Length: 405
Image 1 (cartoon, one colour):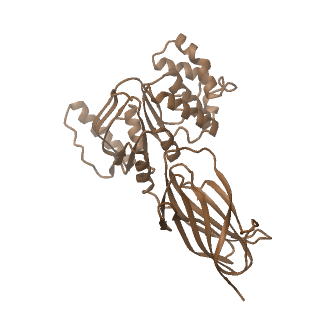
Image 2 (cartoon, rainbow, N blue to C red; image 1 turned 60 degrees about the vertical axis):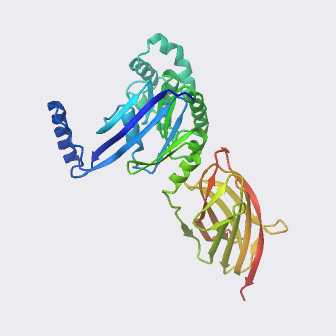
Image 3 (cartoon, rainbow, N blue to C red; image 1 turned 60 degrees about the horizontal axis):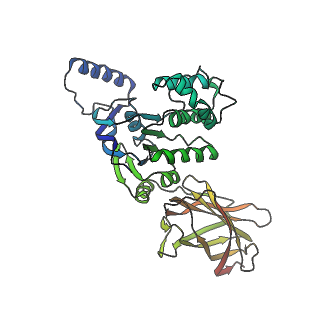
């Protein structure tokens, strides 16, 4: 990592107005103030709010900053100021070197022109000659995987196709000193996502990258710094990626859902990290590779079987399991109240927030008697990356069993 500072942001703020009419009037006032050379009054006027408020940081060559926070936190507004699309109302931004930004789907593309024509137009805007663009053209098209559509108008491209072409132009044609990315991997398939991450790793040694994303897996994979924003302000900035992810996850609560016929219920759930001895229902911290033990109490009015699933924060399943008895067969619970212990084994997930889904179903008809989503949550503390998910069979130990008459 170099000592060369490529991005310097000092006390930057940007305000917007909730009312369109007032926004237009305030815009006229601000233009008049700027033309006459009068001093700006940066206090908030009626219906105005700070989208970004007093943010400062520096970024050096070789650093990747994960800019994270809830929707509306000011991340994209800050990125647009860095890219020169909007002016800050207060503060100072200094960028040293060539800037490549992909902060909107198809940013900078003329929808009427073809993909081929847009590559040459964007290259010309960046100051490259036709000969220079010619030498990289095939590489751009190959990276974007748009060979069949490169001579079709961009207005007919899907959002994923636009991102493919935009990323290829920004990363390959420009070779920037500063790369600004705003959720550009959210619409790509897994193959393109991996390709982009590999390019970003290669660029990391040569430039400074600011990456806005809601995927903590990408943050733990790629970024070596994290800044968390809330309501326009920086609430955390750290080189410890795990701490930054933890500050982000603290902004959210796991939603809980209950469904089924109502012929079963799960009145008690306890989640315990065996290495740290932490126990809880609303949240447990789990070091990467530590083991989890789940205790549940189930009340059912007919014979039933149990299944378990682990979801990401976005309710994407990463582990699904049948529950077996000690003989290795599907566990069948007679009607009554039962208390069980489930050893979930080692949790080798990426850093992030996860939750438990428990289901009780009829063993013959498979009808759901009870399904609890988000029944218990846990946070994995990890800097490692594991692509894919795990499927396991679990063995349950029944500690209490009270059959109904």
